[in-house]
Amino acid sequence: MTLLDVRGLTVRAPDGRTLVDDLSFAVAGGERLGLIGESGSGKSLTTLAVLGLLPGGMTSSGSVELAGTQTVGAGEKRLTAVRGRDAAVVFQEPLTALDPLMRLGRQIAEPIARRTGLKGKQLRGAVRDALEQVRLPEPDRIARAFAHEISGGQRQRVALAMALACEPKLLIADEPTTALDVSVQAEMLELIDGLVREREMAVLFVSHDLAVVARVTDRVLVMKDGRAVEQGAVHDIVRAPREEYTRALVASARKLESALDLRSPR
Amino acid sequence: MTPVLELKDAAVRYRGAAADVVRDVSLAVEAGESLALVGESGAGKTTLLRLLLGLARPTAGTVRFDGADLKPRDREQMRRFRRSVQCVFQDPYSSLDPSRKVGAIVAEPLRSLGLATRATAAPEVAAALERVGLQADAVDRYPHEFSGGQRQRIAIARATVCDPRVLLADEPVSALDVTTRVKVVDLLAELKEERGLTMVMVSHDLSVVASLCERTAVLERGRVVEQGATSQVLGEPAHPYTRRLIESVPRLPI
Image 1 (cartoon, one colour):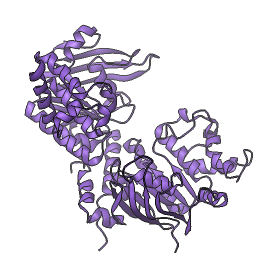
Image 2 (cartoon, chains in turn orange, green):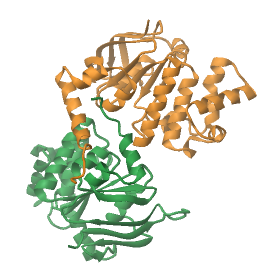
Image 3 (cartoon, chains in turn yellow, green):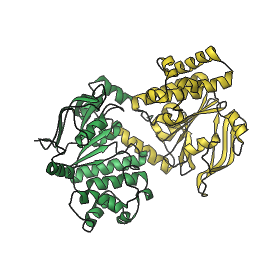
Image 4 (cartoon, one colour):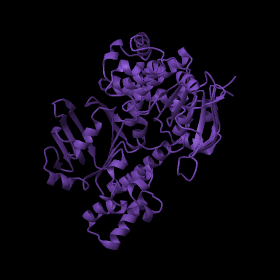
């Protein structure tokens, strides 16, 4: 069953420039798709367009059906029903995604209360569970803390807990580990992989880093200048890229990586 | 041979802080031997770089330049120091003055060091821009007209225009896309090779470190846990923290 069906999506800037150009792809329930591309390729705009979150002045046309709801041109009321329930998102920078003035527990409680109607003690229990799921130590302390009081990796876990608390059918992750240190990134990728597997959730994973995408998704769509360059299984794309741009991308990643394959000259 | 730059048992504690951000750090930068400082955020990489740049002073230990203690009040020494040691920062969007033309930006070190005037700087600026692979007409354009990779090239041109011996680079390619990253790494390797530049590079990206630096020092919470030849440190890591860092790097499927 197709969960997300994007057909001929086009996003235009206020000055008329085309930022995403006639993009089509589909994500089935439980499937994981990676959107890969360099800065300015339109990958983040695509995810924002899916949820009707495009910055002011930008317009989208074409068709985006998310769990049967058309989100292109939809009003705020219809979009609010879709966000969270059908698709939830984790952004790159957790410090800007979290409210700096609200205790983290309350921020997580909001979507849970909306979805389940829980109150008081039961709601607090659910918040605690949500924080434990993303393997945060001392969930009670984190629930009382403000965003600036915890580390970047912990913040991103809180953002993930918030997204998962909605129990969406599709998790959209936009460069969720780019701002994190490598060892924290490795833990975060493993966490996303495990949690999504347990819930049979579909994932749209956006990144500029092929190696990171390969850890989480089965299929990738390569974007350049707002257009789809090539799509296919991660392994095929990495092993035998068909398009010139993809070849350059893979070659660059390989070249950097090969520098690590060193043995001391002994 | 006297190291160009050297830290001896250096420690830094910021005012009001309970503990040192870096302590007992001893490093030597030998001419022609590039050094990488790696570690995670908060490990003290940038603090060490600030020490080596003379922007911060150690609360204990010493910073030495050509064998002599670095004294920020000694104007004559600082002039020699600034001429020999230049810096490239992580973010090419905030390290270039948006209101000045590229020509003026790149000429700045020459003018502030008194090596050239606005009128006489032009040939050296043109040569510096050419070395980093930018067109000569760049001098009359503003930073916003360039992409991230090109801006980092401008920053590198500015840092190398006065022909320094040492280039300190703080995450020079972290803000760039993969394909651009490879090109800027190649450029730095070329400058190293052709102009005999010694680099001190701060990075959390081990593959960039491995491609550019002969020596690596690994920092964990303000201490150097391991240092030596890059092939040794990254190829056969002795410290568990180094091993964990290397294992965490995501790799492409084969």
